[in-house]
Image (cartoon, rainbow, N blue to C red; front, side, top):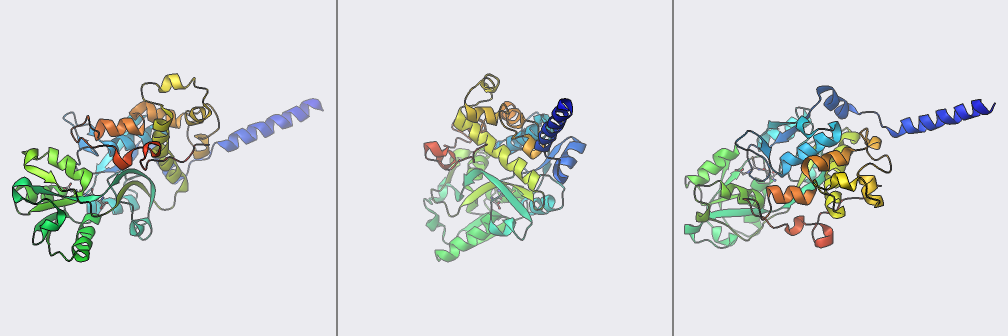
Length: 340
Ligand SMILES: N[C@@H](CCC(=O)N[C@@H](CS)C(=O)NCC(=O)O)C(=O)O
């Protein structure tokens, strides 16, 4: 009798343990069967995604893709990229050509609803700016009255430029191109007086110009561009995996967990670190993942602060300050929801 009772208890325990491992939804199942996560990627935005001389993807968005592959499959080397123009990126995600879009994409209401996307978390708070040649003697955006301004189609930047001109009663001539390379070439060859896109991209593009010192980025920011990692509508589990991977990188920074110390941190008694690294709770299995999901991501690419510094920070060629992208504990907007 006693043994039957114990066996029943054992079954219950096993049942509840099994129940903690969520079964894979459609995207996780597809990712597992192909053994790769496919990310939509920018054709070339220094600091966000560029191919280095060895053909390796470098940048904040590239590392975000690696972190997702590490969390979902235990291996950052299982990240793959498909290069997408601004126009092509949303349809590519909708149609299932890519699993996730970490690609300097602004979270807007239309994209979040009618375009069939869900934005999981912001990985960079940006705003739209202008770059001009120093020789133009333009110091503020309002001095651009009458100017020809190069902009890429299918972007919020094209729409914001029109809004800004109307709101400020300034006449400008937008020169619109489908491919970002065409936009840059047009600016480079002097076909337009100014180049407008997200200010962080301008900082990156400027470093790639023939003589960066010949160009300045104006101090005016004309929009909010919360760049967020998008998935398609209809798979809540995959949404959760991507969202919590981005949060885990931010949480790791807040908790002082780095790429270098993450193994040592496995011995930490701090309850938040124990949950994040899979020593307490079932936070990975609740999403259908290994309990070391966040450990794998941090081990592969470091915490958010490390990723930022490596790709965009003051020690990188882009040279950006953390600013609003700093942690909330230091006055910034980066605030991960609690892993508990
Ligand atoms: N955040 C904006 C901009 C997206 C974006 O990355 N635009 C790129 C297009 S490839 C761009 O115009 N960059 C200027 C350039 O790279 O020349 C959006 O979501 O629409």
